[in-house]
Length: 409
Ligand code: MLT
Image 1 (cartoon, rainbow, N blue to C red):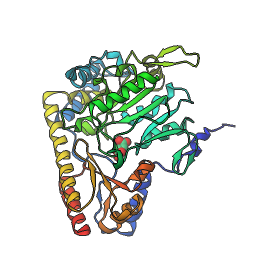
Image 2: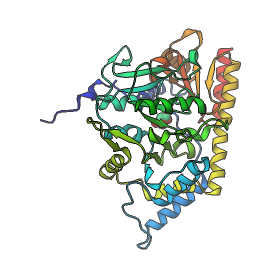
Image 3: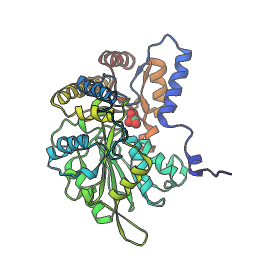
Image 4: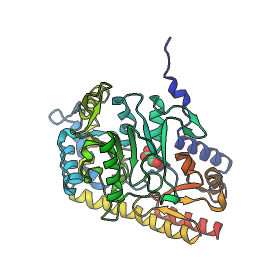
């Protein structure tokens, strides 16, 4: 008899975005003629940059000949990509990493979920609220979250980010072992200044706490004073793991590539108090459970850092951020309260007339055929908000804003 991991039974039936997809599909069945504009899941819409496509074609050709064929690659990723990442994403910001500290993967979502493999089941967890559901659900699966009561997991410390604190999280009310931070934030689109991030690094240093820092949206930062990496803060290598993704930076949502930085200075502890390198544990985990990201994909990701790649990718990011600006201005002109969307591709909207998140979601879908993401799906402090993404096509974005103006004004 195979016994199951019963923690899975505690999860809500569906992952948030699957739930939304179901609702949208049933709307489509009953309203086949209505044109839906999707601003829900943060999926990109512009094609992959020509420099990346060219590099991937070349890599495919290499696979066709015996001399240049690639079989299994290093589980940690190819040195050509790791070197490009270190040089372009870190050294350029005064951060020095060793190649052995960067692990290439198939994306930040997998790594954020899998990282729990190297940590004990009874660590205490803190999350900013609202939060990207993967951090919570993956901890539920491994038994760290407790049970759900009134929309909150009993063993998770929630740190509310609301209008009241201008979406800047306070330090947790009780000590936690592991804290998840995502900046620029998904879902609120807000950011942390260097001094605010420093507060967290100092807290972690003082409390032997591990920070999981998800900076998947760093490429969207416009303000030069906002940190792109937690390692811009002194001491962070001793306390933080950083997750990055090519999904939103370079349109890799369908190609799949990301990376995780686990500094060699970073330690966890045995129950007896002995320090253990998390880098060694993650390396061991990856070598056993992961056979590396495909060569073709990694050659594509390398091209993101070529001069042409950088230029092309910047144009795409500017396109989405122009969408965000259009959306911010239009939604504000409609009398809505809007947050984020300035250094991030997400806009966090206060639902009008005190509507709940799901009620506003339904009204948007049924009355103006626009799909958003209900804020409460990201946690209790998301109730009363709705998230829209700026990753849409320009014409669709303009049309959605025109529909909203007509509907709300
Ligand atoms: C989102 O919409 O929050 C993201 O697309 C989800 C993800 O990156 O997995």
